[in-house]
Image (cartoon, rainbow, N blue to C red; front, side):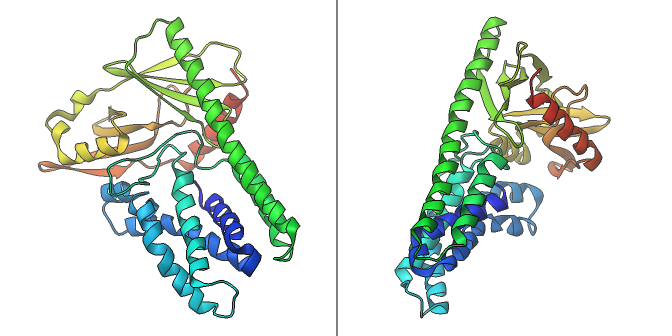
Length: 333
């Protein structure tokens, strides 16, 4: 999830663990704990693009990392606040829960997280977008209401607990909505007598009303969207896989690593003389556009017998139109 959401969650967890003893310090250090796992993005800036993608939400988003770092950070903070009513063990528990709830939340997004690192397993439930105001804003309001009250106040704990309950209830609701949308897509495929091997669904940006689906039909994919306000049948767009365009590079190390990142959901595209690797898990900017552009697209640059990659640049002006199209599409076809 986005940084603000992780800060809010970390602060609320810190308050739940230690707020009664140390007040707003619990929220402060909980917020810090909630941001630490995403420091892997800073490390990625010093690495090549492919390695940076691979390490994102890796070891720093694991239970192992939380277990190892919690007592270290707990000890450091205990030294800073020796007069506080909290012990080293108390601070360690705060950091453990602040660190571990970060990847637990990220596991609900499309990118997912390697919670059980070093096992080669990425959890990605794909039931919430990385930025969802309906999850974050109510949570933030309850947190602000709590932090304005004395640490011994029962109402303070009540507001904080309400924030945790409401946000968790919304997360459960998104799982229900994902299940309903999945059923709508499979019914549409059955009605059109389309045979497929896999289907992958996820919410559109900033909401859980509009949902997208990728359907594997062999040598191509079908892309579809469904809003809970739709009145017309679901329509699908055909996207050829075109993996033969990779030629001799199909078995290269770069393509193998990209395939692992995309979990096999990819199509190859030739634009002019350039070759692009499109990761389908994050969909396209505008499914109604004549010329589809994928959110995560990498230009493949031959370098002798190897391939280099460069992430396709995004057009800020085009993004404004995409947001307008998204808003219009949410309200039904």
